[in-house]
Length: 478
Image (cartoon, rainbow, N blue to C red; front, side, top):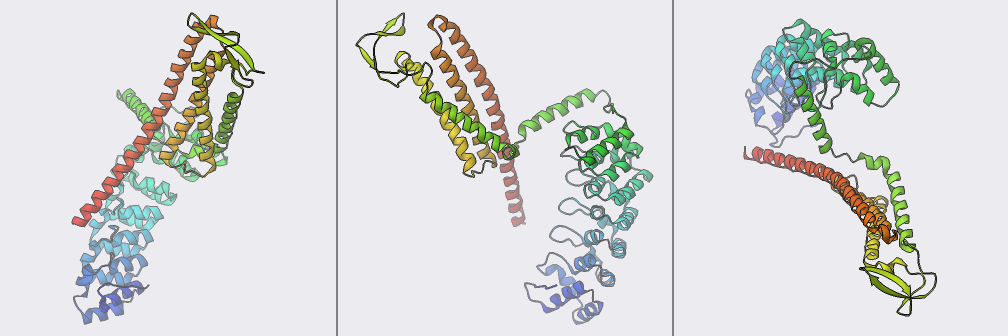
């Protein structure tokens, strides 16, 4: 291990090298040269102390000598706010853990920057002996939760440490903790119990063990924030051999038709609140992965739309004049008609209805042109590698899709109006406006939903940036 120290203190370099090697003779020699060397550790620029290094590498004698000479080293934290006990617990050095606990057992409850205590580290790595030792030293540590509300049991399931889970559950059942409440604790973000988590991660052996615990079995009908029980959650996962096996395990343990958990008078209010949270969560969630899955279908749809609008432009409703024709245009009751005469020449290949319904035909062309250009825009975005999975650009793509479909619908309605006989013009107009306002309402709701999602995403990003900036400013001030 190569160690460099900013102040260039040779003795301090040798002390850190000795801690990495676990050489007690070097430590004794250094202390003879400078009896205050251990007091100078806090003055160097390194984030961790020699005790952190020796505890994590498993140098028992070196660790014992350090804490006997300076017990306060057991309370020092590194840059991630981890104590030597955190590191020794993670590595499973039981004798070192025992020595550190004897020095200061209060360190069993010290949290790192993620809210983890030494017991959490031991559970994540499946250090069964260390878990038993930490619980024996500080029974309250088993109830400590992480910043996001997860318990040590959640960590065992998350890191697939079944033996550690069994030890912890056994300690809970034997202790004074309220078994039902703790064994069915939910995390704050998703509201998942350990059974929810085990089902989601498809841990068959863990599920077999959990459904044998009466308290877990009783709480198996509790709902997470998505409104799913553990039984219902397996139905939402991709079907494979594990899913079928887990479904059979749950059916054998919970019955084929598990009932929803019975609550008190607040049950209905809780259910309604859960539904509202689910709706708000759906609106606020901005999923862009669907573009990756359906980009091929989207390309085909845009190409077909572009072809349709192109054909409509060159073959308009009512057809085109087959040869140059002279006609007379005149009005009766504010309606324009076309008749024989020498007043006007209708050129071959031009639209027939363009001479009769000039304003409506120009509107038809405008709608059709916008639909054509929006379809080409979608094709262009998909072909050129435009970062459509980035949320602001995703919003623009959704806007282009909505605009394309909207103007396709308007083109159809305007074409329907152009070719309708004058006798039913009033009825056609009513149909036209009914379709128009209905369609605008539908598209408006969709665009509003995507806009809310974009604004929600942007707000969270800005808030996160402000919090990090404030935290950085605070740390620099300190």
